[in-house]
Figure: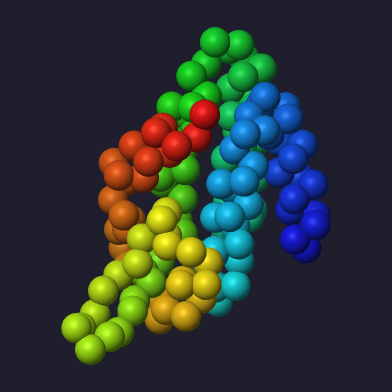
Amino acid sequence: MAAQFETSLSIALEELDKKGWATFLLDMENKFHSIALNDDMIPFSDELLNTLWSLQDAKKRDAYAPLDVMFAIRFAKLEFWTIRFLRQSEQGKSYLNPLTASASELKDAGVLQSSSAYPSEDIIKRWVRDNLQ
């Protein structure tokens, strides 16, 4: 499954001329792929590919479409941002930021579901615009 996702991601990013996004997106998929899903949740890899292919449709219609901004907006709305990674320590509970935490840190954390994004959508959008070139 991982090889199939990598192939599909590579094709989508090549079509968008955004191959530089591959490392970040593969890292994010690695962080989220082992999470047990609710029955109504779509796998992160599927949500991500759907988002990328919708950008390809926009690019076909408008060669000047601001793909970086459009991706930041759509990426921040993915359902997986409602997952909370909880770490318990002697100092108390803390939530890990999946944008900056490593896959191993997230793997060892407890998982909860929320109704809103964490980090918040505006933080995700800003992070994506600042870090994906």
